[in-house]
Image (cartoon, rainbow, N blue to C red; front, top):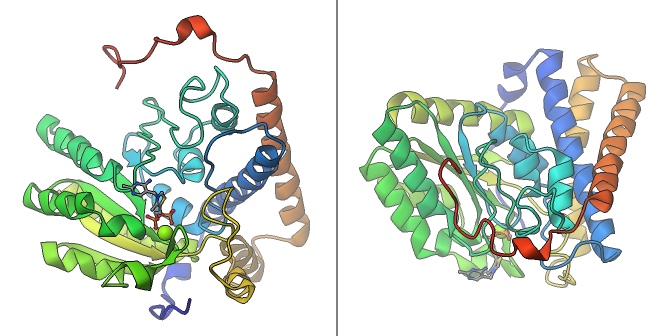
Length: 338
Ligand SMILES: Cc1ncc(C[n+]2csc(CCOP(=O)(O)OP(=O)(O)O)c2C)c(N)n1
Ligand SMILES: [Mg+2]
């Protein structure tokens, strides 16, 4: 599907000039990529069961948005959330163990791929229902105002979710109550096998915020620096002015909707075309041009990250299964759970 992009933001690459920051973004994106590739492999080896949705191709959107937050800020996501959980600081070992259904997983193996959660990291899920997290995220943002802290909530969801009633209800109350929330639409151009122009009367999702008189932006979701730059502004607006916003990141998932999707509704050429704008390769090229990175360093980083992912798999493999006697533990969250 052809999408008209806003012209690339020329200032985006100038905004981040120090090597350490760029390297962090690069490493985070590569960690998510290698983690997801390994997840696919483990799924095919029947180590992971149930539904499983990968983030491959969407790394710049995930890392560009979440890296703009403080550890005390909250993130809500969807069933396509392995990358969000890792970007929010959850140990990849605990994420992989959850996918394996093990006791050491983020949700003690009770949730699996679609229900990662960490109160410590303020990563509040992992939801299987499309649009489910948005009203709950508004509740967290309302609590922030009520308690008078300066935390921010980020609620991430797909293009398909913007056709759901809960999306519109959430934007409405967020604006009405001045909630400190950034809504992030990961527009990967498809909801399962349905292209965005066949499901949504308005295909430029950012425009939907106009109905609620809300700040909204559209950004190239394959350019991590552009995403980060605009997210910094929207997070500051939420934190300092308690004004919500909608950010549409136009991106692409290279794999099918889920591990069981034969992916017959789009051409191979389309996938290849998006891969020419790969977010990790693009940042690597940019850093090489700036003399911040060499091919040897790229290889070394890849080896390190591949080893980290192998270690996560080993940890998951060796972790115990949940004990059946704990079946009713954690059915309700206790005092101090959040
Ligand atoms: C309320 C609801 N309707 C339908 C489904 C089935 N379903 C699961 S994912 C999905 C597509 C959602 O697409 P989008 O919001 O664009 O997210 P993406 O999968 O592209 O990340 C659908 C229709 C669901 N889980 N919940
Ligand atoms: Mg989508």
